[in-house]
Length: 501
Image (cartoon, rainbow, N blue to C red; front, side, top):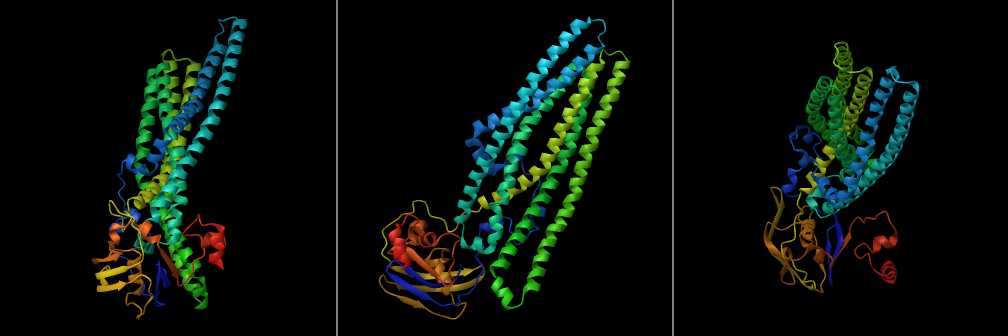
């Protein structure tokens, strides 16, 4: 927390020293989360989390917008299943051309019918594609909006210790880039997989109905390909999370350097700052290099397996035709075109799998934040009594980690009086102020206002009665009026102008 020049509580004010001591926050449950101060922590994360655990942050908004989810998936089924009619029509047309025993007029009539059916299918594909894209994009935006609000609100109520351990720039990346990555899970993950899984089943069933042996072999090879790709997914996710953690660290480092640029320039510290930033950036580069090997193996396996499936189907189909299995040339072409659809499906799943690993990693980072409980938290049944300003410290002891800053401190701050608190740097002036604002709770003893223990009062109610003037003023990037009315956004214009004067 920044230093205080003056802090006023209702009718009294307290003046503090100009150089309060910097301290480390107390250890709490928050340290269990992945800390941005160590960008390599995530490289050892557990990669066996269930799918439900991975997507936990996006589940509440998905339940809220379940109708839109359903419509998006249905539109996707239309987009990908309707095109299966094209291979069937192609195979039928080829067999029609080879059916020389039929009169020419009859074949021309059937050809015209196939053309009309194809036109209707193409129209249906266009409509389904539009709604698939529009609805999915809208759903993604709604989920990101909901998750961004939830995460921002949660971070706001976390302890001062949390903010002292995490760069502002790093936290900013959590509510921006992490939310964007999490949105990929909606369009490229949940909806995509909900569409492609039924598509694969439909294609396999259709091919088996055309020729059981050819269909069964093709489906089996596709399943083997899918299982092999699935094994590479978790390592990629762990790597992607490590990259995101390191990128957050780089963002925080840059924000810290730019915020203190006047100090850096005053001491000619540009070379040192540049080296520190370069070291952080090097970590990202090294992790990206490691990740490139995993992704390269993933892509090579996928591409090779899909081509192998096509080649096996071609030669197996030719062998079945030559051995009089009843498979026609048109049916073989239909199967090969269906396999091409499988190739497209596998390619989409491969591309989306690489993207959703970023989404999984982002969701894990978001979950880390959401699992941190606000401290000090309001007690159940916290009250909002009228306050006049009498503040009582009774045998208060407090410290950070293993260091004791205040011990057995007792004092009565009476309403209507002014107090000056002076002392050497490190003597506990800022710590006392933070206890007054209940940024921390004392280890022992109590802080009471008008006879009420601060633990029993709603924090928002209590702090609404406190005015703080920082030693280093912070101006938010908004209007002067907005800055003045920060504590009371509904303040009338006249009151804001009076305060300005």
